[in-house]
Length: 528
Image (cartoon, rainbow, N blue to C red; front, side):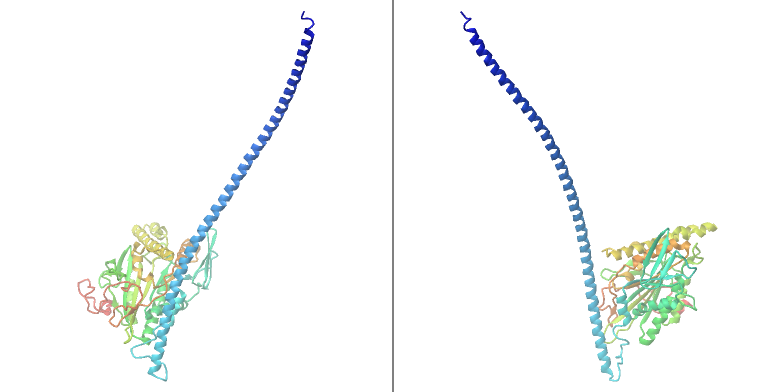
């Protein structure tokens, strides 16, 4: 019964099977195509991911470089801004200094015109001086002093065998070139004297500063350098060829005889192992106490220091000779008669007040600094000879170097214009505080040696002089006093107490008793 129906059914099933097989094959082919496309897409995706990573790295590196450049530019701008601020401060200081200088010049010009008119009104024949006034209100040396600067550095080379390690270009703005340990260095100073320069040539450059004391200026001249190059020769000199100090005193007294008769007082101290001693005391030198002046007055006070009225040049030379003989000296490796202390000579010139104007008080400080060589070099001779005073020489050398180091610190602070200047670090700098204060004038005379064995000390001295040459104290100012002798309200703001603010002992004054308790009397009594 089923036989007739089976073939058609099988045929339909076979056809359906064939159709399903075709659909399966098409599905497999589509699946394979999709797999191929998926592989291609995965490869492309990996490439895109790699490109993205590379792009991210490049972007990060570029951002880092740009950020570093921005940081560098910002640091440069900050440094430039700081430099501009410092320059602005310097310009403000220069403007203030220039304004003060212009005001001083204007007042001096007015004073000169007024003096000329008064002189012409006295006599039509010529400009005679009014009674009681010995000179015009101002003078050229004082103005030249302001124009040249307040701290000047002069250098003098000791005569000797020429050395290839130290050479100089003499003259104003001269240079000294050294070759030390394979390094060549050039130092530029205000004036360099050749080794064959005479004492007269050296003093001629200092004479305007010295004479300005007669017009109320404060001037400090100090010698610096190691032991040996000739500091005492330049400062004192032999009788047949006197140095700066004798020539300065002779020039001052010559000008005083020609133009007036100011009162001259003298003091002389030494700083030995940080102890201040009076070299002109009637009795044995004692240690003096250095104190700050009263509040509101400034200055330095040295309790017990004697000031002597000096009537003439001969008496002054005799008293200076007496003071030098009391100074501490000893033999070192550098010199058989080396000064083991710093000496400070102060000459005060008080000009009488004219009837219609203030008088002036000028001060001249002559400072002979002890040798600046290192302690081991200064004490070598004692060890070599078995000297029992070896420890004493080394102790002296260390005290000298400590005070010179303190002086270098003061110069560094003044050059940087710091609000605090460490004047109290040593007795030397305390005594020099008024001489290095605002309105004062200082001259450093550097003595150097050209010997190869002294080259290290020479370079150290030149470095110190180079630092000092950059110090600015401001325009030089005059100290004026009224007729009563009190400071004028028109005077400068320089401390009015002076360097050593103790009463000047007159003849017979008990201000400074002698060893037996008696008064010292006149300078002639002291010398006798």
